[in-house]
Structures are given as structure tokens and as C-alpha cells.
Length: 536
Image 1 (cartoon, one colour):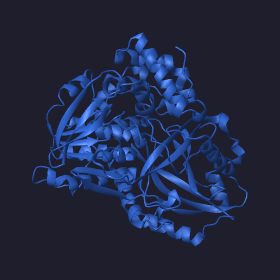
Image 2: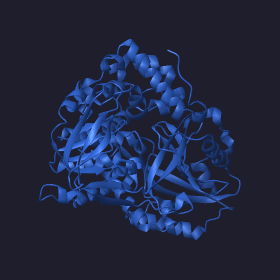
Image 3: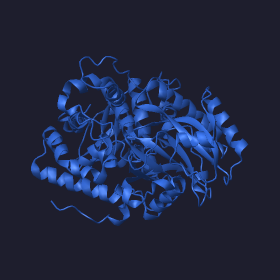
Image 4: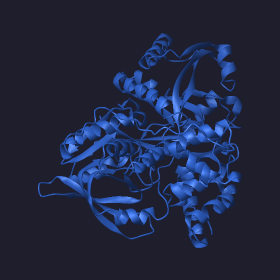
């Protein structure tokens, strides 16, 4: 965990010889970090922004095999991801949870029904289970009464899984730190250090928190580039040619009262017949996603364009017309970039989600892939790094990632739902969490699964540098509450301001920064508000 003064202590301790430096604090970097620490290596992980800032806080929140990839004959990718989904359900209970998917079948559907049914059989057999079902029209409408009944003939039900992507990353990072690793957010790699032969042997870091002006060179036996959509930017420092195709995926968030779903629903867009989804998540309902080439620079905060929002609303109203949902009901939006290997397919959705590992002048790059397969990607990256590391290491057998949480909560005054929520997110730290929590704060925040005590814990222990770190990634109120949680800001302030030691001037500065980030990248109309500021 990152307690008081952790950041200054770590910066003062950077000038040493590291075994591994990992660039990127998303899910892939976290996986590499965790496994390298388990091998007793001296490991430093750095990210130019906050932990999980990029793709790993803006995913579709699903741990899935990618059923639609079967249509593109990506059987290997699907099988790999299905197996990892099953592993995560077993090893990270309550953090990764099973999710039912309803698949409506309409008379006008273009797909061949027997092919779809066969695909579900293959999907289940890959997981060594038999969990799908076929429904008739009435059964499916009882399961999901909001569906458009016109032309509905029946459908199917199958299972994948969902999670909070940022909390998944945070738990892996924290358990690696507890085992001896070091991780630093807001530390940009300004340069790769190279020896006379041209081999990469370290990095030059710059503090990007906005709070300090400092830099430090760090030496390492090997540097692993897990920077996701920014991997090509790191590789450009050794004159490696770009190889990624950055694809943008955007999502809309609705209050559960406006958009009630008990299970996920697979949707087909009426204009181009792309597969999309709507799913219940963290007390709200998500709908997405787009799959577009992101042709501009991957700026700090990617946002959903006006055209994407209209596109998602089209499939929403075609699939759930009785809900009569529009822009007025959107509580937030978010958009992330997928780092996909560019093979030049005319349709972005046809690009393979397979991952690759490259060794270029001693810089190991791991990219592509899916969140679900992060553990496999981490092991393969470290396997590629073996020639640069101490002898005798073996990364083919993947060790456990998650430490088991305690089973006994003692006298904690929480119900079973809250207990499951906390054990999933905080793992073996859940007892310390409960001991540090004020009884009055062990209460839900509105209709969300989050507790008020999570704000205090995050501010005290989870490396929060800015208010947006807290409200968009640690406890995700900026996504889950209307207007970026503006109506709850006084209560949030009363909890976290003493923990972070922010005076009134710093609080106002952080509130303004957060508001600008939310308006420009997470609001219901982000494209229209990029230049707005908040008066303080």
C-alpha cells in the first residue's frame, strides 16, 4: 500500500540497480510486475499518469472469451481467453463475478441460427461446462421484459463474467508491493538509457504529478514496455517502426432506475449489424461499445464523440424502445483505446485480438491481447526477458496472482453483500480496512455497492495524487453518480481532505481539475464541454 510519505521515499530510492523496470501501470504491466516480484526480482513499475489510467480503467468491464471472435475464426484467442476467464472466476471471487448474457433472436436477423447455436456449444466446451440455454419468445421476454418484442422469436442465454477493471489492477499492484515490489504513478519515461552496444539498460524518469519538478535515471537489467496504446511511443525512442492500430471503444452509463437490467444483453446495431451489449455494473447500466480507428494522437483523456453517442443511442432505442431513453438520461460516458496489432484489415472489428512480444535492442514490448489474458501475456513477456535476468528463472508455470482474503469478518457490522464487495476489492487487506473504518462510514453510497469508508481508505492507502484518481479509478463515483458526483462533493471533501492533508487552496485546485477532466471526457456530452472550466 501507499501510505503517508510513500512517494518522496520512493523517488529518493530510485537510484539503484533494478532487475526489471516495467513501463505501464495497466493490467498487463500489473501482471508482469506481480509475477516478477513473485520470482524474488527487484522490480520497479512506473506509469506516466495514474495507475490504470488508460485502457484498464475504460474497458467494457467484461472478463470474457470473446464469443464474437469465433465468427472471425479467432479460435486460439477465444480458447485462451475462456480458460483465463474460468481461472479468474475461481481465483478472484467477488472481484470477478459470473454474468449471464441474453441473446435475442429476431426474424430479420442475418445470422444463421444453427451456426450461432453451434458457436455457443463450442464456447461452453472450451470452458469444459454446459451452461447455455435456448429460450422461446415468452421465456426471453420474462427474463428481459424491456426488449423490443416486434419480430422476436426467442433467444439464448450463456455466461461470461464482469469486474471493476481499475480495482482489479489496484489489487494486483498492492499485493505485489506487499511482496516487495515498488510502483510509482505520475512518473514519465522521458528517455530510454542505452549502453555502447545500443542495448536498453534503464530509463530516465520525470515527475509528472504537477507537484514536484524532479527527474531520475534508473538502471535495470531489462526494461519491459507494457504501455498499451502508448507502446509505439516508447518504441520510437529506439527508432522502432509503429505497429499498433489504436481502436476507440466508447460507452454510455445510465441509472439503473432508468435502464433496469438483471443480466447482460447482446445487441445488434440496426445500421451496420455490429454486435454490442448492455450490462448491469456497479449499480448502473452500461451500453456499448464502438470500435473505431483513433486517428488523432492518444491524448491524455480520450472521449466519446458526439457521433458515437448517437450511434449507441440508436441501438439502445431499437432494442429497448419502451424505455424511451435519450441524452437527458445519460449520467456519464467513457472511452478507451485498444492496442491492436495492425494488419491492415478494412474493418477494425476484424483485426485479431491476439497479443505479441518483441525484443528490440533489449526493450521487451508486450502488447495487443485482451484484459482477460493478462496473466498469459505477463508470463510470455518475462519468458522473453530471461536472457537478461539472473540464471535459473522459469516463467512457463504461472503462479497464483491473488492472495486469498480472510473468511471471518469478526464483529464488523456489514451485510453479506458488502462483505463480498469488500473482499473482492481489498483481498487480504480487508481486515485492516474494516479496523480503520468509522462505523458511520460502513454505509452504501446511495444505491451503489460502494461504502463511504472506501473513500477514506483510498485517500489514506492507495496512492491518490489527484481528486480524479480517487473519483474515477479508486471509488468510481464520477462514473456512477449524476453530474460527476457534484451533489456529494461536500461529504467527499469532509472525508478525504484531512486524510490527504490538502488545505483549502489545494482542495479548490483539485476540485477544478477533476471537474474539467469529467466535463471533457466523462460527461454526457464530452465533445461539447472540452473548453469549459469551473469557477472557484
